[in-house]
Length: 179
Length: 305
Image 1 (cartoon, each protein chain N blue to C red):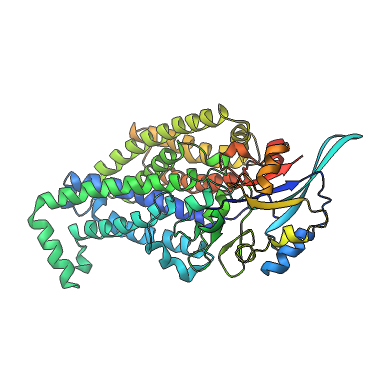
Image 2: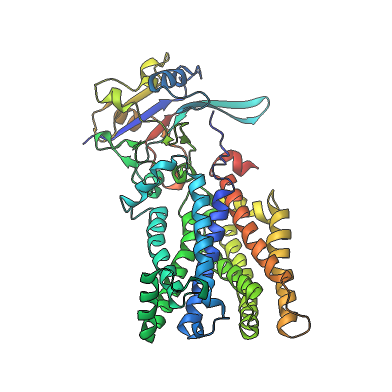
């Protein structure tokens, strides 16, 4: 059984926000909300500065607190690719999952249910890449099966320095940043 | 860009947690008095506390309902039981709380309501035929009340993404605060001298214990990771410190404790001032913990502050 993850090469990302626009278009994300976003992380002191540009989204954690705290089972781990999804018809909009996410990746859809990145599961099930990955002009995003040792993403993670965000929280995120 | 300092819960959740804690306290107190047989005296608080608790808990539940974004799907809570979700536990605990409160109200039906609903009169008569049933209702009321009080704290401490809530002391704090508010409530409304004296003394104990729990709560956070230390400083000397020290510790605990210590030693009369301060302090405590907790985060932007 696949376990999908994503690797994002921060040395290639230029912060063009194509991924953000593609996600909003593909998933009909309402105005004022985003399922993915760009972070410009500047460190150091002028003029000795370094900057990392990151495309961030739900980290599709292996140990997702949003699923654990959901009182109705609306937040669940989908069998296909172990993707964390929300069933809008089960969600009561209690916002416990929003409070439990260390990545602040969830929001309440204007229709009342919790919403977030789905890795474009509807596209992946049909053999396509997630919209953000498909449109990236610098091809800095890699999507695939982390459990397949021969997948491109597994090879990249084995051969390149990488890190995940806030690993210390213990959620075991599945988005990795290559640097 | 999603706001990293998400403020997702407004006034509804603190009010719900406060009323839940208060009802937990009243259930324990009325359960204790029922267990001890004080239901025989109509002027004792246990005679009317369950009735008041039903109203207070329903008001709290209504506040929670107002907070839900998908209101008409609320029944989904009762189509499943999620073992890892404190909120799921809480919703099922409430299924125990309401019948327990209802059973407590039937131990002695208030005169104006007697002979109105035959079924209730019949159950009440049956309960009173068997004194052991009354004792059991008192014991169950204490147990269910304690579970409800603990739940109000566990609901927050189960959310690991908010460092301020990552404390195993939170459920103790909310349980004792609920007991303290309930004792103050009974102290304020009871007409019985013995009960007033007893609840004032008990409340003094709860308030002192609450101060000790606060100390342990801060020791725990301050000896933990950097995010937890920064979160603790939100209350100690940060953005929420003025409200916390003035309204929660000062006016909510220390001053009413001093007044009640004088009252139980017969230096001053029992008045409603101290109980009102304790109850208001309990409410503000929930607001401070819920709001400051939502402000705390694992993000580097929060740590740098």
